[in-house]
Length: 330
Ligand SMILES: Nc1nc2c(ncn2[C@@H]2O[C@H](COP(=O)(O)OP(=O)(O)O)[C@@H](O)[C@H]2O)c(=O)[nH]1
Ligand SMILES: [Mg+2]
Image: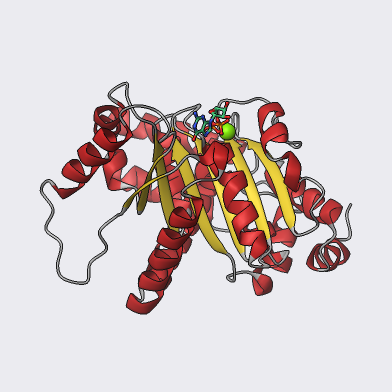
């Protein structure tokens, strides 16, 4: 058993090992997860969470690293969460990222953490926000969440961020692919990286065109900007930063930031509750109940709606008994 209060205090003093330990606890769905989350709660809500998403190789890690440098120049503390839903590894930094983030590895104002989510009950939607909370409570002013663009997971991670950045690279009909993937609905800021390559301007134009299609924006609504960058050389990074600042300002002014956070918290609660409910239904007592109810539905002595009501009532009565300690832990 870990002394959670001590660990949280150490993390808040900026001790990287305490931060790492806390993330491991929440990531692993530890039996102390609830205790950790309760201890973190009063210290959360300060960090500005930026999600970066896009196809593999588009330059997310390079851009993240460049953004970290820019934020560090402003004296802000930064947390980086690299989420790879397909990776079986977790804990340390991914090999490539270790190289690209290398310059920040020894900076005490920067936390770098990779996270694999495969096998997690509740997946990304559950695992990432807990780690973000740890970084937030540890005093990070900004948390950058990099996730590989593999469809659903990037949509999920976009929903975790205050601001979502979608990265694209010129050529290969990336823009059209983006439209197919529904990426045009999730970006608050679009970055055409690798602008040192041919076709960057065409990609910017194409994106701007697609973003303008079917738009019914009112005056004062946010129009996602399209920014060009050469992350590998640090070019255009100030423009990305400026776009982020602008979006943050717009959200704050309009109350959108508070709205998004409330919607996110609601979703998070719902996910945890539904997962806990499903666990209980699958548990021994729940399973027996379900079996008995199924028999009655087949017989015709009960309809499925009434059966579902009975099942929900049956597994929710009596507090947390029958649920796992972690609630949603894998
Ligand atoms: N030519 C060019 N290469 C870049 C640029 N940004 C990143 N790269 C390179 O693209 C490769 C993939 O970058 P990485 O940041 O790992 O992409 P990620 O998979 O999206 O995280 C690396 O070899 C980078 O050095 C850029 O602006 N121009
Ligand atoms: Mg990467």
